[in-house]
Length: 173
Ligand code: MG
Image: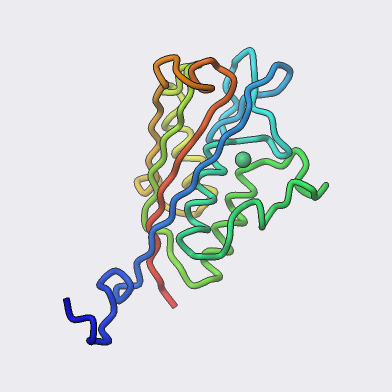
């Protein structure tokens, strides 16, 4: 390896960045269940300062992380009344414009939701469309997968849901 050489690592030279996002919210009675911008009929919903859309939050953190401009906690503090009950599709849309303002294009995003119940597959395509629309990218650039945790852990006990997302950005300016 030519460590004396000033040439950049290939990913950096190509202006490519990756980012990882992860989020968890508790499942409680008396809340709507909103995941990927879809309201899903269920006896419990996710608890949070905003609408607690765990998938949207993971995706937002992935793109913000790839652009190295912080995270949603910094952008939308849960101490601020401004974001109380917020539609997380709006938060994701704002995050995506900050990413573009920082000089990046969102190339690709993949994600996975971990939830024991309800079954997510009927809503997957709508979630992909919602996430893509919020970020102003083509739906083919957004993946959503779902898995149970085989009844293990807090997701398996239906005490909460978690989500992970990964994003690829390209520097455009
Ligand atoms: Mg969150």
